Amino acid sequence: MLYFSKLKIIFISFITLIFIFFASSNILKIDNNLFEKKINLGLDLQGGSYLLLEIDNTPVIEQKLQNFTITIRNYFKEKNIRINNVKLSGQKISFSVDENFKQQIIDVFTDEESDLNPYYPRFKSHQLDIVETNNLFTVSYSRQGIIELKTSSQDQALEIVRRRIDEIGTNEPNILKRGNDRILVELPGLDDPMRIKSLLGKTANLTFRFVTKNEEGSFGSEKLKYEDSTEESMVSKRIILSGDNLLDAQPRMNNETNETVVTFTLDRVGAKRFGKATSTNIGKQLAIVLDGKIISAPVIRDTIASGSGQISGGFTFQSATDLALLLRSGALPAPLNIIEERTVGPDLGQDSINAGMIALIIGFVLVILFIFIKYKIFGLITNITLIINLFLLVGVLTIFEATLTLPGIAGIILTVGMAVDANVLIFERIKEELKNEKNNLIAFDSGYTKSKTAILDANITTLLAAMILFFMGSGPIKGFSLTLGVGIFTTLFSVYFIARLLTVLYVSKNKDKEGLI
Image (cartoon, rainbow, N blue to C red; front, side):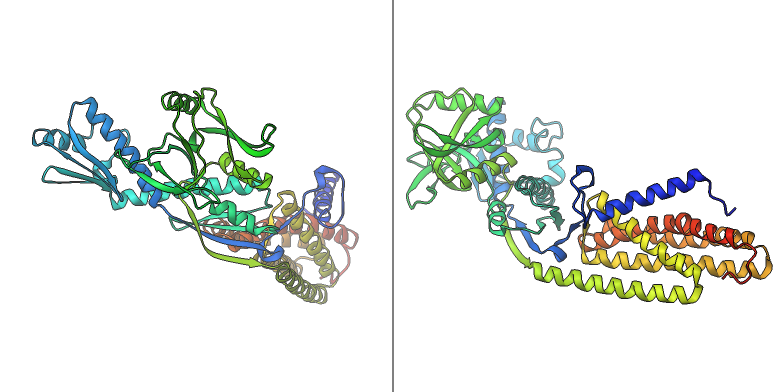
């Protein structure tokens, strides 16, 4: 029936006022923390940077194989199986065996219950390729193994990129996967794109390795340059300690030397390994290597068992802060290369806002004029409801601090059209009811009741489409589907609560009047 209790009227009024207040907070300056929420503008409206990053997985493959090389050597040593000339070259492990050990090694690599399998489960079927020729074994990643490694590397890189950007405090970044070796980063309103590019371009792969004078050992050695210097040193490829063992890193001022340093703290495992390495290699130089360059190479004077230390290298406070940030957020599993970069200026963003607002205003005014001419007083009720509906929609987006994009504005415009469509269905149904029913109250009630099915069917199917777009789409598509989906709920609320309430108030006072609509 066309009846609203006082409690329901109070509830509708309260909900409407709350959302209008939140919507108004985008314009008004309110000191209360609860109402400081605002809608964030997307990259196309606010301006900012667009970066497409590609992951170079070559170092990841080599490091995984290096770890597996150690596993192979230790395992065969425990089993008293003699292997010779263990080498890691390119992306392959090779070693030779005596004829009498050949079958044992084949059994190790083909036995599903082998002790090697916990490191690489199911490697027999897809992760590794093992080839034997004249007692020479070659181990490398299979095609499927490479795909799995790339996927894992991308997931890890995505999380670390997000950590780095979050620590800088960039507002509403959009970080997404592209394929299995690319990451898309959108940074609305970015003030310092060069710093972001520098931080994302650094792998922050920290390792501690000994300086050596020869190339002995199964891992060999390599010449590395010092940071900001042409000087080089021969460094062992064997990693004593990596950044994975870091618990924390902070920029500090060394009071003795009056220089900026980065202090670090190791976890329990790292502290134990660091203590053992320094106790047995007193007098040697320990190179601190970051992304293939030596930051410093101090001589070990004593055992370092505290699990903490510092990195010096002529840092400014800003560079020390950035290095500490990189180490805290963790090393990228592989280097990231920027293969595409775009910058959207705020002027272009403002043009987009203006164009969107002009389109919204023109469409809104045309709809208001049409609906008023067509339905007169009920057209006025519809127009009031449309305005309130926009406030409700903006209020919901404000509460969740959603990001508004240009396609999002298109979703708002479409919401206006759908709200009008619902009212048109109702009023046309009421006209049909008035032909057979002389009681205005019954006719209006029947019009709202009998049109409900058609309105719900239309809005539910649109909502399902919006949900599919939101979960399957990305970027601008999500912005469109979000405003459209929220708009459907606010439209149904405004039509069946606000518009119906205003209609009830008018019809109740004019229940005996003919030709109401």
